[in-house]
Structure formats: structure tokens, C-alpha cells
Length: 126
Image (cartoon, rainbow, N blue to C red; front, side):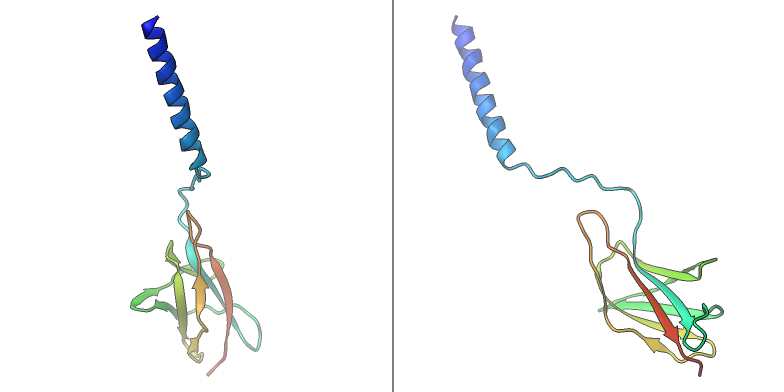
């Protein structure tokens, strides 16, 4: 009989503890293993709207951080700022085109990944 009372008391305490824990539970968030880029940049020629290819360098800066974006053929998109939120200024240099400097681009993130900011910039011939 004594052991039954002890079991009942321990069960009651366990139940109270579980109720208290549930009041502080947050929603379970499950993140994917995907690697997400913060920036996706495309380039077109201003007068023709045709995609630009050739010798192109795109640099994204956020304070002291600097990264040269990578090209992904065949769609000629450039990607960077992988899983890194921040405020980026993008500078584009390309043969036969004027250097282009963007307005600040803000890359945000949720609990798991950054949100990709996609931009298309029009370059002018020199």
C-alpha cells in the first residue's frame, strides 16, 4: 500500500512537470540540408535586353565582408552570399560595359536559411 502511494505521488509530480514543460514548448522547426544563396544576379544589356556573357566579375560587399559571385551556366546567373544575411552593395564589371554599382540589397533569414534576393541589372555599353 505504501509503494502504491509513492507511485501515485511520483506520477502526480511527473504529470505536473509535464504540464509545466508544455506551456513553454515552441513549435518544432525542421530545417532542410539545402544550401541557400542570399543573392541571385542576372545581367542584361540595357538597349537590347539580351543576357550578357563574357568576362564578368560581380562582387558583393557587406561591411568588411567581400565575395566574388559564382557563375552558373547555362542560365548566366551569378550566386553568392550563401547562407549569409546582410546588406550588400553589388559591383559589376564586364568587358565593353560601364561599371555598375547597385543600391543596397538586404538579405534576410528565417530560422533555417536566408531568403534569396533575385535581381536583374541592366548594363550600358561604354
